[in-house]
Structure formats: C-alpha cells, structure tokens
Image 1 (cartoon, rainbow, N blue to C red):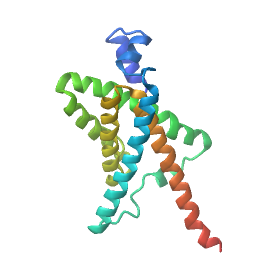
Image 2 (image 1 turned 60 degrees about the horizontal axis):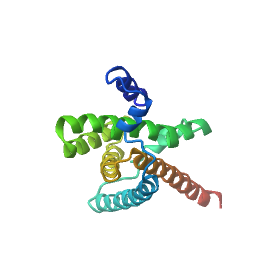
Image 3 (image 1 turned 180 degrees about the horizontal axis):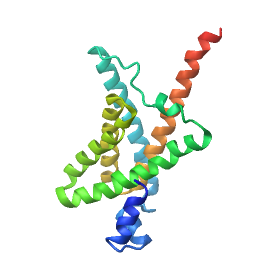
Image 4 (image 1 turned 90 degrees about the horizontal axis):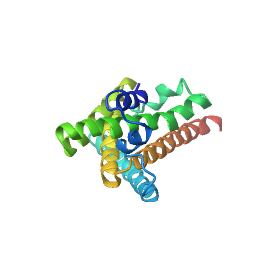
Length: 186
C-alpha cells in the first residue's frame, strides 16, 4: 500500500503525469552525488545515535537483549525476502513517508511539523514487530531521513541512506549471530 498509494493519489487526485510525480516526490537526478554523500553522513550519524542511546539506556538499567526486530523477520528470510526487506521496502517507505506524507503535512502544517509527524508515524509503522525500542529508534531514524530530504531537497538521498542502513543492520545481525554460534562450535 505504501508503494502504490502516492502514485494513485498523484495520478487520480492531482492528475500528475509520471514526470510531475517524480518532481513532486523530489526524485531528481540533479545533485545526486551530493545526495549520496549526505546519505552516507546520515547513516553514520544514525548508527552513532543508536549506539549512544543504547549505552545510555543500558546505563539506566534497561535490558535491550530482546529489543531487535530482526529475529521476528528472520523467520521469513529467503533471498527474495531479504532483497525486498533491504532494497524494495525502503524505496516504498521513503516514497510514502519522506516523499508523499511529508509533502502533504508540510503544505498543511509547515516543515517542522511535517518532519516530526512523519518521523513519529514512521516509528509507529514499525511497532508491528512487538517491541517499542526499535520503533523509537525508527522514529529517530525517520527524523534524520526527513532532515536529510530537507537538506538535499532530493528523496534519493533518503532512499540511498535507508537502503545502506538496512544493509549494515542486516549484516551486523548476521555477523553477531555468527559470533555467538562460533564459541558453541569450539
């Protein structure tokens, strides 16, 4: 639904052709190198914030042992599913949250409110995994991605950052899982 709704809306309600949809969603070729650079910086900031928040929460006594959403998703891990979760889903989420919803909220409530609302909704959308901590972190990541789109005025920056974030997260999960299994094998 996230992938299709903006396209249907822009076509049926706004009567946009494909070119105008891309323009409205800030899917621009101009400045793509700058957008990729800012995407990389945003991913570094995101992982730094996640580490700091994790350390602070553990310092204050929160148990984060079972706080990841990846184990629930692991039940469905096949090569096509991993590809969808890491590459396709971020494209749809960025088009919906930082492209379509951000644009609608911005026109109704202003830029700052649009950043906050879309970030909160992005976090809520990830509550389905059953843990509040990943949804909270996802809202923070949504905030960073919204700021990234505002900074670059290009949705490709957020799409790139989101995909890279997912690739790194999945890779860290697999590495972490491998390291936990390794001592059992010795």
